[in-house]
Length: 299
Image (cartoon, rainbow, N blue to C red):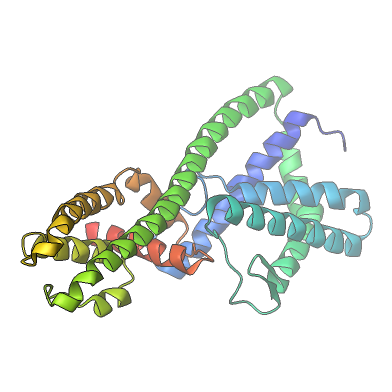
């Protein structure tokens, strides 16, 4: 296609991944006022830009004699790719790695008019300028060298992407497991509330209901169980004593599992690379904020 071999397309993909990473890292670093290694992957590649560039080239090069079609075709093709990628990534990882909800004329935060227009202008600039330069530089090198470079880059890209994918899945599992922990904690809270008619506990369970941080809920419940386990003077409640001891042990297990079965260093590095990452689910978003706050306290 257009005299390009498969390895040429791969080389172009990696070049645009790198250029996209340079652009995003610079833009986000200026916005955040500190250096940010931007992107889903830990290395200097942003796959969405590489995939977007290849999509634009495939959609636009057949119309390269008509700039308006290059603009429209590239804008539509790249926007569709961005929409599909955004939906798939959020569905898979439970995290939205970019969000246009604050932009005008957006569609569910996945795409927006400004982004589509930018893709259109990028298509024109790329087809009539940037890509010609990149193509010229790439074709300066012998095929044997290009194949070797392509092979090495593919290995590095695959390793990095696989590691990043695993980290993203760990983050997803952390969010899902923590929501389950919170649900378990609230069940424990309800079991403790049966003590309130006997005025046995000094803990305000109405206040506990207002707490949103999972670790706070578990801490308070553990304190309440510790206080009550040896303070059941009513003989008829004696069978409950063992139950509360069991609840205490279960709560300690839940606390121990929280944030400890995952590689938090890798998860925190991913979140630092994506400072605007958010979750559509309110429960997931609260937990995501907990993770970010905990990471800041550890600095």
